Image (tube, rainbow, N blue to C red; front, side, top):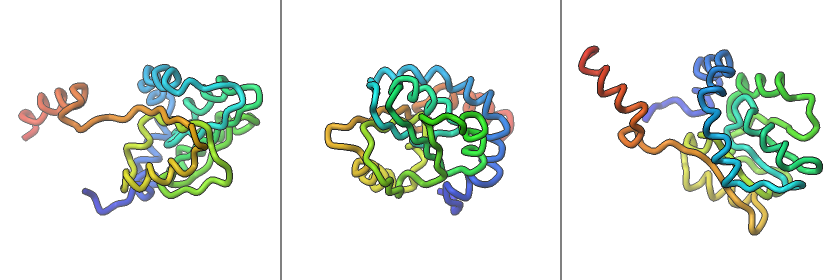
Length: 169
C-alpha cells in the first residue's frame, strides 16, 4: 500500500495524465457503459450519482435516461479530471459535477441510483465508503457499477505483465 492518498494521487500527475488523455481513455472504457446502464435500469425523473465520474461520459449517458426531469451528479476526487467534465458538459442543466471523495461525501439530497465505472474500487476504506453511500440512496434505491477484480483475475493486464516481467527483470 502506498503512503499517498487517492486524493493526492488523482490531483497530482496521475490526474493530470488522465485529464490529458481523457478522450482516449473514455473510448477504451466505453464498452462498460451499456452493461452498467442495463443493470441500473434508470427511469425518467430519477436522481443519479456517478461515483468516480471522470470526464463525465457516463454521467451524461445517465442524464439521457433520466430525462426530462431527472438529475445526475458526477463526483470525483480529481480536480483536473472534473475540470475536463465541466469543460465538456458544464453548460447542461441535467448534469452537475463535484470534486469530492464519495466515500465520505454527505450529499444534501438522497439519490435513487448510484452508478460507477471503475470509481468505487479506489475507496481507501471500501466498507465505510459503501456504508456512507448507502446512506445517500433512498429506500429501495439501486447501485450498478463496474469494478476490476484483483490483478491475477484480470487477464488483460496480468497476461501482459507476466510476458513483460521476465524481459525487464
